[in-house]
Structures are given as structure tokens and as C-alpha cells.
Length: 156
Image 1 (cartoon, rainbow, N blue to C red):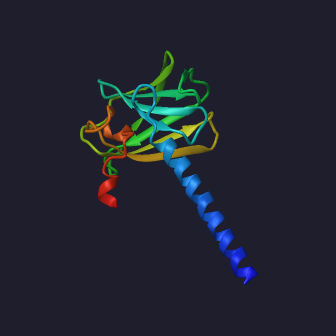
Image 2 (cartoon, helix red, strand yellow):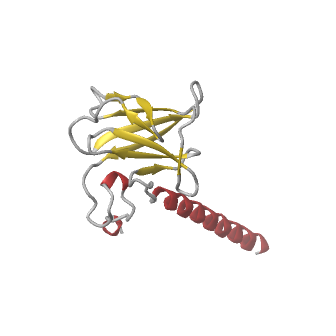
Image 3 (tube, rainbow, N blue to C red):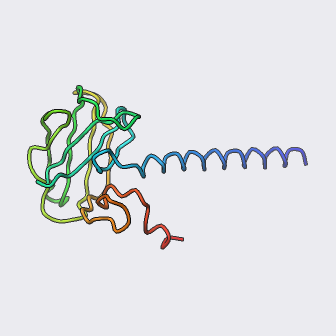
């Protein structure tokens, strides 16, 4: 009986730990950057992915206080659009951000891969998402950077 109670308590502790880790991960995913773009928290400093009015991608580096920090040696590349003929974006430094060399392709809900390297030759961190440029009906951001998690009620 003692073994059963110990096993049950251990299983409950692991379940609560996993639940807390999932909640923490979810909290990071639901934050937008200071410009209203998608916040990528898998790297330090964090990366804000933002599509401007000219349909170019702006990349800003964000510290834990949600303040923009100057780009360092980071290398960013973005591949998006039709998988049979993807568009590849490279970036140049412009003030406190990096800006893409060309505009994103026409369309909406574009499969997107952001590749982030701390410096040239370093191991890449990849972030994959669909670039949905529709305005969220609930929060002030575009769908690709939505923070309100609407639509979750339909999954329940």
C-alpha cells in the first residue's frame, strides 16, 4: 500500500510540474512584442517578427523588460510562402532593427520559418508558424501575433 501511495504522489507531482511548465511556455507564446509583432522567446535576447505597411519584415531584439536592444552579431533568415517556390528574405541593419531585403509574397496564411543564429556559423533556432495577416477581431494585433487566444473555446 505504501508503494502505491508513493507512486501516486510521484505521478501527481510530475503532472503538476508538467502543467506548470506548459503554462509558462503558453504565457511566453501569448505575448506580443512592443511593436505588435510575434515574439519569439526561444532565444536571448528575444526576437520580435513584425510585418510593416510596406510588407517588409522587421526584426527587433527584445530584452526581458520588453525594451528594444541593438542588434549584435545575430544572423536572421526567413523562408516563407509557397513550398514549391519559397521566398527567402535576408536582412540588413537599419537603426535598432533588421529589415528584409524585399517584401513578403502576396497571399495570406503563409507557411513561415524564421531561422535565428547567435552569430555566423552558430547552431540555428527555428521558429515555424503561419503568417496570417488578418486583423484579430479581439486584440489589437494581426493574427500571426495574436495574444488573446480566441478560438480556444471551439476546441473545448
